[in-house]
Length: 251
Image (cartoon, rainbow, N blue to C red; front, side):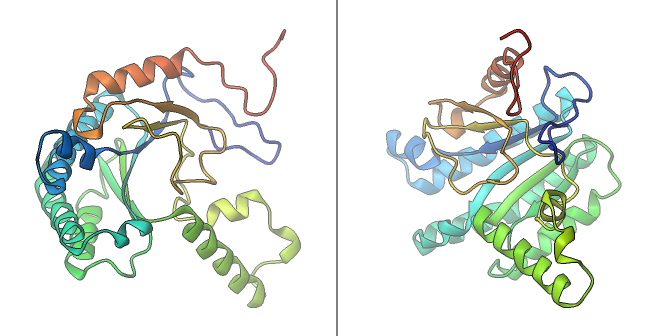
């Protein structure tokens, strides 16, 4: 587990060469479509197919959690027809993948602000969470209407309300307090962050949680990101020596 306690060094459990939690920035759907002379919406549809492959593959590998950056708060600035297509795709994906996730013993979670999401999207999100709640395998987490700064802001407001109500002593606030008020409360921090399509930025994604994550960037656009590419990222991770702010012994 990569969640750091107050001394800054997390406990390692299980196989240190296999990440427990992999977070992915699924980038490049639009570029994939443009290179093929197709509309951006076709890139998003191809991206949904790629997501299914990676989810099933991750479950077979025995990962504890896979978190996919599906729709950011900033994405609302995109054209209305593209946003509508994305929302329809979420609904279609959740309905079609529920039986697959049930078969693969996958749990489902969503992080991000619910306010602003269409009611039919929220309905399918909640229905999927409830349908898979008794599963015990890998957790698939979709970051929908998500932004890390918004998440930290919401956590700060929640903590402030508890202090104001006298439920929480301001002097007792520490890193654990903040973690417990984030959308990801109860989830392990990512060990590995993968970004596709070659962009070298984290795009307001899990800023608190990826403090000690290893980064892997590939030029492959998300619709072409196969299980073999995922394995390449895991192999690269396995070769690394994680320091968590410390030093490798003997160096």
